[in-house]
Image 1: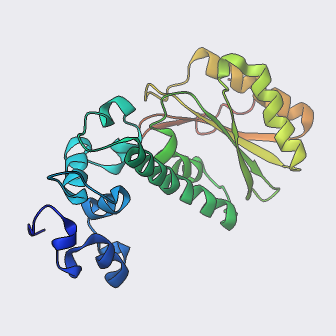
Image 2: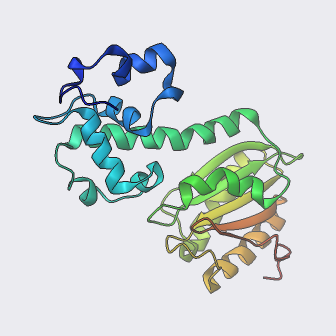
Length: 234
């Protein structure tokens, strides 16, 4: 982008991010320009585009921005709490968009990759363990997706009760459970295996089949179903 001075107001309309978006569409904007629109304003001596460029130089990708600590963001001069909140909110909206889209489409789950492709972008970067439950109908179509708050496999009984409570409330024929390993390594622990065995047994009692338990790592996953471990023989 050409330099027309520190103030974007002095730039030609075709170079101003907001005007460019309105005239040509958001898909024509660079990552820097999109960030500049979120920032709205710059600071003395630096435009919003200058600050956006610094952010991208520091973090590299939007994915890196989404899981970087607030402390790292605070190192960027000209980025106050308001601007930071705007960027963080936009990143979260982007992550949730796909989830909403999937719910509306009610896609059929036929293999672990169908679930993994959906949740990997969000769950691979979480710093704490989070549980998600896919509620399926008799044709394995998604009826809903629930997140179990503050749950871990080390608290198996409370999680299992909540999973099947949601399954019963939604008349689910089956469920698929998934959680992340913040370490990035999806290999199941002893607790993961014990939890899965208990989960399958509880599903059998309630007549809600547990199709899979998937562990999400950093661009890797472990599927108990893929390993033939969903019949209680974990």
